[in-house]
Length: 173
Image 1 (spheres, helix red, strand yellow):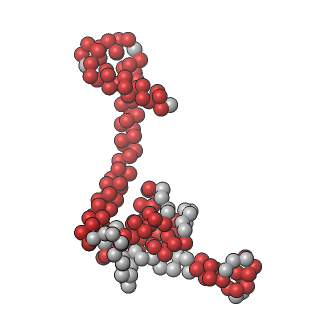
Image 2 (tube, rainbow, N blue to C red):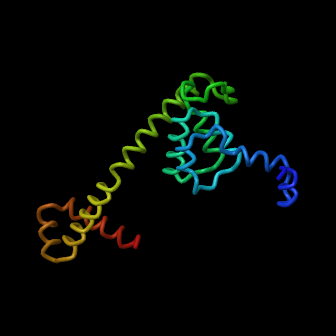
Image 3 (tube, rainbow, N blue to C red):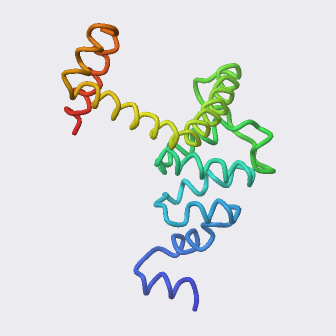
């Protein structure tokens, strides 16, 4: 079937069907697999094409981790990408209002933030388990008169903190 006939049957513009047909051209399969269940704009894919394949995967992982698939977020990832991680043949335009020094700082900060986020993501389970066990301990210490009395006599500052944690958790529930 011709593109014109498909477009007419779907009641859409021919240019729109062409653009959708070429949507994933230049996007690496790993990034496509990561994003296949996500809702991205057509322009987001245009932005991802500006990145080298490894950076596309990294950008897809960051979008998933941040749960942000907006075009502006993808554009910021592209802007914060070092030149050696851009797609071959793509020459970036300098963002308006940013000096080369500011752009370089933005690239470094973006890389640092991505590393920190991955570390936090890897330790989240352990940190959450530690928090839950500490919360249970503070709740049990504050639940009995003997526990409160002992903490008040020997560790007043800990009692205050345990009570604050227990109250804040009770208010959140």
